[in-house]
Amino acid sequence: MVERFFPMKASSGGGGNLRRENLTLLTGPISSGKTSLLFQFALNVANASESNRVVFICHRKRIESNPPFLSQGIDPSSDVFDRIQMKYVDDDEGIRKYFAAFHLHLDFPAAVVIDDFGDYFTQLNSKGTLMNSRARDMAMVRTLALCHNAIVDANKKAACELVLTETNPGDSLRSLFIYKRWITTIFTIKGHGDGSFLLRSNGSSEKIAKYSITLQYLILEEEF
Image 1 (cartoon, one colour):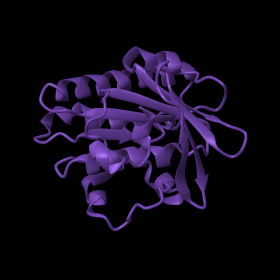
Image 2 (cartoon, one colour):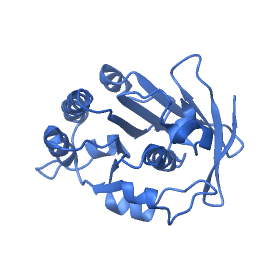
Image 3 (cartoon, helix red, strand yellow):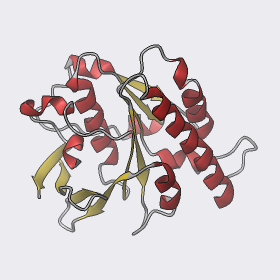
Image 4 (tube, helix red, strand yellow):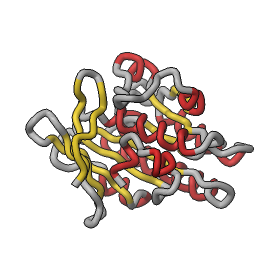
C-alpha cells in the first residue's frame, strides 16, 4: 500500500482502514527520501486516531542534520506531531534493549519506525573495531528476531506495527535474505531518471507511486 507513505485523503480516515502489516521494510538508494517517507507514514498513523502514538527511532545527529521533508499542506504546528515520540538510539544494543522491554509497556504504540536500520550494524562494536560481515549479519539476525517477537506479542493485545528503512547502495540489498526471514512486505525505491523516484512493493498487484523531493517538500506526482 504505497499510499501509506504519502498524505492520506480525508475520506480514508488517515490510513486507519488500510491493510496493516506487522513488519515492513522500506529500502532505497541514498538521498531518495526514505526518512521523509517514513516520517509521513508516522504522521498518517498518528493522525488516524487521537489515541495513536508512534515511536520514531533514529540517530539524533543524522536526523538533526538531515531532517525529513514534509508534504505540502501539512501544518508543522499541528498537535499530531505531539503523538510522535522521537527516540534517539546510538547503536544496535540500544535497539535490542528497547524491544527486550517492549512487553512492559502498559500502552503499546500504534507503530514503531526505525530509520536507517542497517546503519546500526556498520559502526564500532564494544571493542572499538568495525564489525566484519559475519558479525554484522549475526547482530542483525538477533535484533530482527527480537523485534519480530516483540511486535507479534504486542499484537496479541493491541494493533502495533514496525517499519524499518534500509539504504540500498546498489541494484540489490546484500542483507535482503536476512530481512525476508522475518519481513514479508518490502517496499523498494528506484530512481526514475528525471529527478523523481518510483516506490513499489513486492506485491505484484500493488500500485506504484512516483514522487520527488522538490523545494524541500515531499511531492507525490502520480500513482499507477
